[in-house]
Every structure is written in structure tokens, then in C-alpha cells.
Image (cartoon, rainbow over the protein chains, first blue to last red):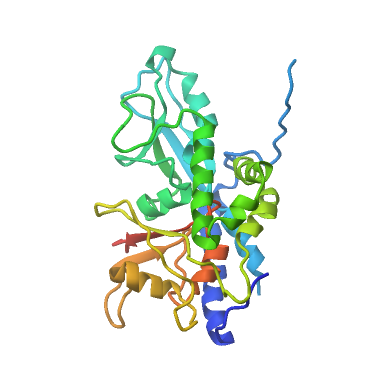
Length: 52
Length: 275
């Protein structure tokens, strides 16, 4: 269970908005021009265990 | 307005484009082409660079190959720090992709830990989780987990499985309503200069009178120079996952949403770029 932090809505809006906006900017800055790059970790990993 | 859960996904799926180049002193049988990869910010270099290693081994003689290590502009990159921390600390003002130099000899023993296999990274990662839970819940949550639960956290990180990781990690993020937060906030403050690699002390999410502690409160106590006074020129940036949260941001919220998978809030203090 989580507790809502006791800050006023106005304050909440400012710091939370800043985090959301900056994460979006970070995605644009660091990823948008590089989506054609290979992922270091493949998204669908099949691990087969056992012996041949 | 986006949901707080979106922050967890954004943090998890943060990627840094990198260009790996073999160091000029390495002897090769034919020319070594650079290798381009998107690196997960929350992972570890030695965990996600198998492809880089294989790529360069193809052009090298086996006798010239020792343990691989990586460097950026003369700084050996510590694999035991999260990738995003290394980038924010050493390279955030550089032009992307991040140019990383690959070495297979002259391992810098004084700067780097050896990493012979993924089990070394797993042990390091799990010790971080355990240390963080000791601070947050006196180790009660991590000790109540089974071995397979610990494995689930590790496998989630290793295979980049957000849902698998968070199905277990959410337990490490719980706290009782009456406590109002964790016992202590697991954090590390990094700087590029100074004798100590990072600052880590005990700090509670709430003050003695129950007021919410913010990022600014933490910095004023741990690293006052990082807090710019009104009217003064800003010299240092406080960076977490490549962003600069406002100093008013509650520390408990940051710990729950911007911690790395090892459950620590990794905070980088870097000089403002001079352009």
C-alpha cells in the first residue's frame, strides 16, 4: 500500500510535471535518431535448456 | 497527465546509443569495424556487451585477447555502476552516439573490478538489492523472499523483462501508511572529482516532525554546493536518469520511481556544460 504524499496539488503539479516532461525530452534526445540501432538485449529471448 | 507508472517504464526503457571502437593498440588480422548498440540505462556494461566482444574477437588472434574492458576518453568505465550513471557522470555533454573504446589488454587493475562471468554481476546486483532493503525495511522484505524470487529480479534485469522484474520489485517498494515512507532512503551521490567515489549516508524520507524530505533537503545536507542559491550562477547539475528533477521533488517518491533496479537512487553531480 502506498501513501499519498502530503504536498499541495500546486507543488505536486510542478515537480511531477517536470519529471514527465524531462523524461520525454530525454527520449527525444537520446533515442529518436537512433531507433535503427540494434538493441543490446533482444526483446524476445528464448532460452532453451537441456542437452542435445 | 501521465500516470506515475509511466515513469517506471520510461526509466526501465531508457536507452543510450553507443559506438564501440577497438583501441588502436590492439593488433588485428583485419580492420575492425565499429559496432553500434542501444544500451539499457539501468543495466551493466559487461551484461549487455556480449555482441561487442564477439564482433571484435572475429578480427583478433586468440593470443592477443585478455579480459575485455571499456573506456571513454581515457576514463576506464566501471561495469559495477549502472550504464546510465556512467553516461550521466562522464559523457552527458558529449555528442551522441556515446563513443566507447574497447580494450583486450592492459586491464586497469586500480580502477576496475574483474568480471569473469555474469554470476559476478548477479552477485553485485543482489548485494545492492539486499543493502537497499536493509536500509528501507531492515532486510525484512528481501529475507522473506525465496531464492526463486531473487532469481526473478535478476532474470528480469538480465533479459530486459519489465513486468517480470516489477512483479517482484513492487514488494521491495511497499511501506506502511503509518510509517509514511521507507526507514531510510537508499541513495548514492556521485561526482567526477573528489577522493570518495560516492557519498552514501543515512537519510530519512520524513523529518522528525513528519514533514516530507525533498531532493533539496538531501542535497543541502550531503552536498550543499549542488544547491544553487537565488541569484547565484548555477555551476552544478543534479542528474538522475539523465534528467534534472526539481529540488522540491519528495525523496520518497524519487526513491519509488527513479531508483535503479538495485533499489538505489543514483544521483550524479556534474558541472554545468560550458558550451
